[in-house]
Length: 158
Image 1: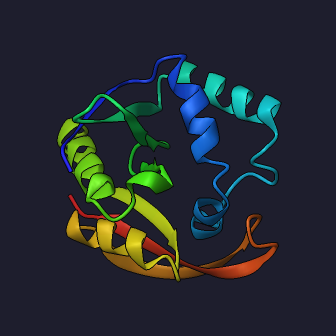
Image 2: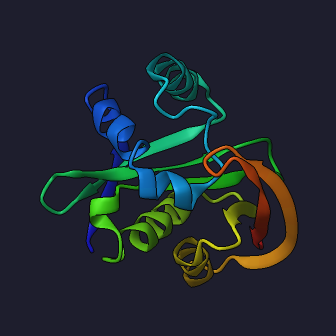
């Protein structure tokens, strides 16, 4: 799937909110806010992200102009981490891989880190295709599942 990245616009937030409340997507992501449906928390989170100079957050747009999701990089130098969320309607078409590759081309920082639920095979494949290597395993509380689960830690070396 062909995608482009652009700065986040106010109107993108409605799409992001809907995407981050898709039950299957929330379950796959696992590590979400305690209540993804809390609109005030969602809005406050995005206000912080958009005004933090240490965070790069971009909207993923499909060839047809539709908002597909978002990608970003955050964290202090040496510990910067990538994140992405692709709407469920766009799963299985290469959007996440294309978006992450575009982000990596725009962000020269290395190393970069990533995390994914150990049973989120699709996300782990995206990270592998983009050159991330498994560097560890942890356990953490996944709000979306209401329990502690296994998590894979990955690094894109310098």
